[in-house]
Length: 422
Image 1: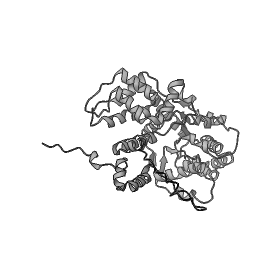
Image 2 (image 1 turned 30 degrees about the vertical axis):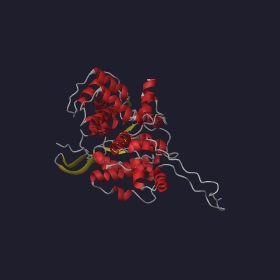
Image 3 (image 1 turned 135 degrees about the vertical axis):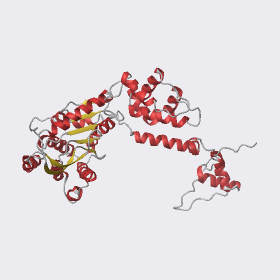
């Protein structure tokens, strides 16, 4: 997609701009490290922007729009680790880290994010920085200068923070401290920062002017849902080629329009809507039609119906609806899998079908005795396993037979095809 090419070009500019003034073979690179660390530490709580450097960018868009996929595809174009051995004929053992990508913790904890940094570096480089810096009573503020030092020691080219909207859940002052650290890290250490998040991240990035300015150093990218245009058609054509049913259904304008209407131009949702009906029709009619797509949407996508209804009704940009809390697409696929399991085992029918209620014999006044002081009145169950037990006891039947009648026990033979007799 054009937006992916634009990001790839922007990332190339950011990466090279950050390295422009950082040459680890130059002795000044190492002698100035202590001064840079001291400057970074002293300015962590500074409210005034320093300098005019603009390294880094930001990507904001609704969940499922393809932000993370585009970033990961671009990062694969660059080796994450570069082992240097010599430079211009002179020995130069240096382990370079071109980029590092982290996910912001769900709780928005700044300390959790700093821990993630050291663990991620150790996993990639095989170092032991986590054992050195993580643990004890070291605060998040105390670990931030160490992050900058480790980044400088390995000439970190770019730091990517995904799911930045989770900083909304940070404790009072934590969000501002972390954003200030990102600013000063790009400012002092010349390490570019790329922030990625949903429309809720707009509130995080624009909470302070300089955070917004730093996030738009190379031009902020606001990725909205796709329109029903040539790009959407290209996307559908590439996706429709992954058709595994026996009956090949050609892609038509009607299918393209219905896919866009049902998913409102969200690629992540469109891929699930295309995969799910194929899994459903395999072994049956083996054809994905418009009717099958709509039936699948009505049956399995109820989790996202409220959100898509709002988008469909208001016709507004997704970026203007930061209050829409989109469900996870992993959660959606799990919901679909659970519904299929329930249908296969017949659980759905048992859950939804009302169980027959048997009348309960009321005791006659002659036989009824007043409860003793402090004694609770026995509760009468008319349905469910306890109700089946009471019914079996009254009718002198087996509890197994009653449970089977009420649908709690299923015959295993229903799950296997009957043998054909000749």
